[in-house]
Length: 144
Ligand SMILES: Cc1ncc(COP(=O)(O)O)c(C=O)c1O
Image 1 (cartoon, helix red, strand yellow):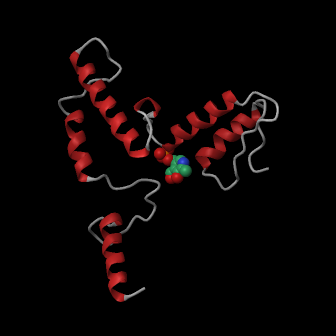
Image 2 (tube, rainbow, N blue to C red):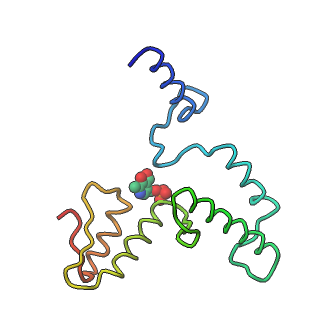
Image 3 (cartoon, rainbow, N blue to C red):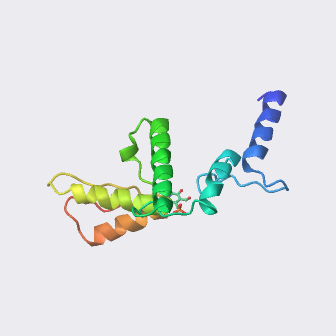
């Protein structure tokens, strides 16, 4: 690595992971800095526009629903999906549970299997073990 590349690498690393002091968080898969533009766009939904998007009978709900639908479309466009295919969850553990339990529901025919690896995150291993304990049809034990 040239000196210029190395300087650029560490400048970028500081801007992504630094806390302004001398500490750096390198596990940006676990959590990451929120882009200030995202914070700015979200702020009104913590203060004035705090309706529940599932509330269909008042303007607070309609306003929230419109924002969630817009976000679904924007995220869908980013990854080449339709808005209907985007499901927001509270985090990875919830998403992993939804995906695994949803997949198992459809794995009912003999010969179909759900296979997970022992190297998976605990949030994948734990629901896999629970599914294994229930001996759902077509489910192979994790790691085998
Ligand atoms: C693959 C994976 N699953 C689940 C989690 C847990 O994430 P959350 O705290 O969003 O549930 C993490 C966090 O690092 C992860 O990397």
